[in-house]
Length: 119
Image 1: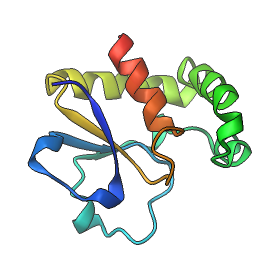
Image 2: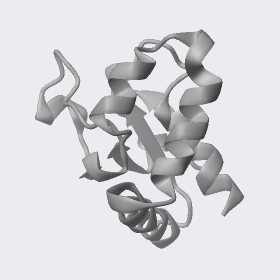
Image 3: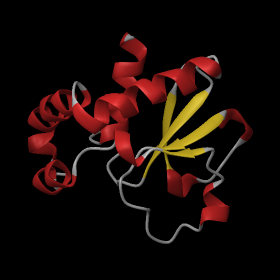
């Protein structure tokens, strides 16, 4: 099964496989019980500065993607990405990356899914 992405507000389903939150900040209004997480990988999320700069502005997504890929290539995000790749591989790709953003096509989970599919 390929890695998928999903808003954490959609709730868990059996098809999710392993559930991994890839946000640095806990999503509002979701309890830890409701989230049914297997992992919360803050260290793979965009830096606070990048997240604030992006501000979920669709017009900035291209540059956000490039800056985030740069972060994933070094520092804390690099080790987090390696750990994420290992977790996904151990589960034979049966994983769902969870995020809190309202925009389903312009967020860090989209970028991470691309990276995982390309590796």
